[in-house]
Length: 220
Image 1 (spheres, rainbow, N blue to C red):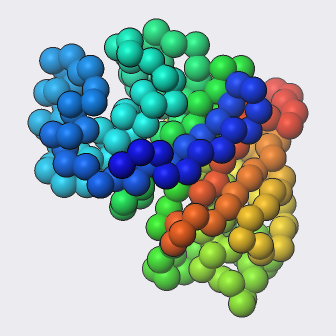
Image 2 (image 1 turned 135 degrees about the horizontal axis):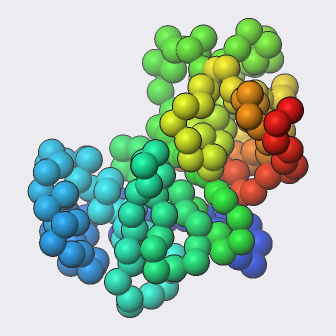
């Protein structure tokens, strides 16, 4: 399968979605993997985990449009980064799709999720009381997934483990729509950052993404 969806946000920033229809062997054949990477793949359970890892790397290769080996590592917090390319990246996957976002000049974060009713069971785990108040009762499931994808995208952009979705990432109230943009912030004892969050529905999935910051100050 080729790229199922591509969006160019500016000259240096884009994201794309890949529909996973290949076998693990087919995906591996499209990559240049070193022994350590092959060993890691073998350590994963056969099935979706394996396919998700491989498909994000195939999509990354497609987006970088290169025949070179792509050295994609993860830092001490688990955030992926490229050793031999200047781009900043974010990776996501859910069921039958993988998503990759890249930028040459700003940090990025993306999340893709299959929309399922079970999210209502955990709404108070990732949203504070003020955020729950603006959820549209006519579109509860979709609205909650927009909020989840937004917080996940910000979490991935900032790249640190000690950030709470509920306590540190705040979403400004916004009405439900299948596609849109709203403001959000990351607030900890050490920093305050604000973002424009974009989101859109894609078949039965929701995509949320963030590129760069609206503003930044430290030591509030």
